[in-house]
Amino acid sequence: MSSPTDRPPARQRRRTLATRVRILDAALRELGRNPDSSLGDIAEAAGVARRTLYTHFAGRAALVRGLAEDAVRAIGHAMADARALDAGRDDGVEDDPASALARFVLTLWPVGDAYRTLIGLAPQDLGPDHLSELLAPARETVAGILAEGQRRGVFHAVVPPGPLSAAVEAHLLALLGTVNAGIWADDGSGAATSALIAAGVDSATATATVRRLHDPGPLPAARRHH
Image (cartoon, rainbow, N blue to C red; front, side, top):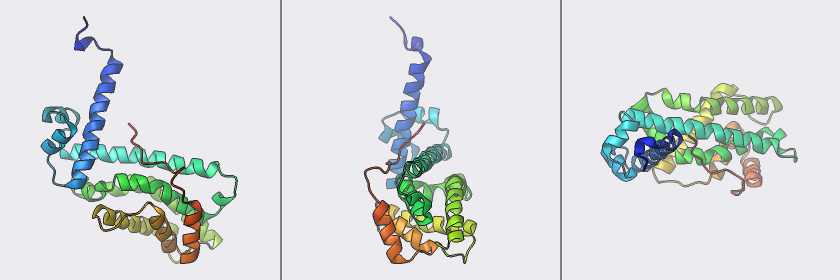
């Protein structure tokens, strides 16, 4: 009979990964419920011993960093999904910067919603600049969309694309914060409409653009990638 140490390395890695995922899932739930949840609380919620949690994460900062790394991967995959949706369209909508921005927000919103707990945790646990680093790839993409929209006269040009992208990002983060506080709920359509208006699109056009694009079916839910 084989002993546990005889298990193939691949099986060990799968079990280790499954435990890590379970801990991170529990951390996201517990810290979202109570940002002051202890590692013991999280270990209990994950159904593991506290020493097992410490095997994967040396402390609270390491655990939050693990959530942040998860969020980065999820953002990357959501951005790839957004590009795939653009590439797969043959209706010309991808040529419209307003539609491109709305689609980007609609695709990223489920990820932001899933990881909105990090908005409050990242500054205190990882440092004030970490959240900005997490969002840098998305910010660059939005800045590119805004630059093209400004060139075509779709978005206002009062603020350059980079600062405008940062302003739209702050606006969306604030909206996620209200969701986190339980004072608002959104499926992404309100956030996308608001982002377009913040970029200079009139309210009626913004609403019509998002209504045309918003279909919960094909939009990917937030996914965890390890």
